[in-house]
Length: 162
Figure 1 (cartoon, rainbow, N blue to C red):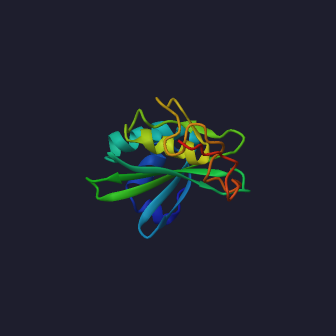
Figure 2 (figure 1 turned 90 degrees about the vertical axis):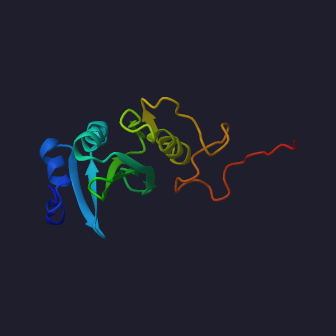
Figure 3 (figure 1 turned 180 degrees about the horizontal axis):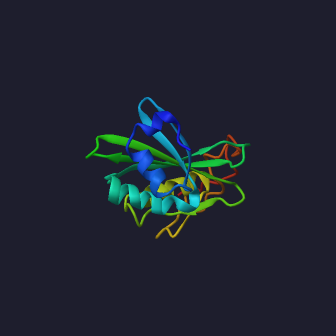
């Protein structure tokens, strides 16, 4: 059920009408709506928003670690519609025990590196990603540096003289 502040926007009610079981809540802060989406519905919701609601631009994907809460993570999608001159934030809650979500690279090619960054920094896997590997850290790096339980000084990592 959408709060009243989101019912004034045309996108949120259209999304809720099309996918009534996919939207689990939402709010608006500073005029920017946020919708919570079931993780298993993220691809079809994103495809609808791109193809039928003119959100042609994926501005970014990131994550938030709410440790020790469960579900622990939120995967955050930042969408932009130039035609509507509006932005939309989608959030999917992902648990630590099943730390993966479907890739949206089939909807926006620009999702490729954003998803790789989230994978690298938080350890959240993206099913169906065409090249899911580290992008910022060395390939042999242990752990996910942006997780709240990651050691402040990192795990032991040896730098070798060249």
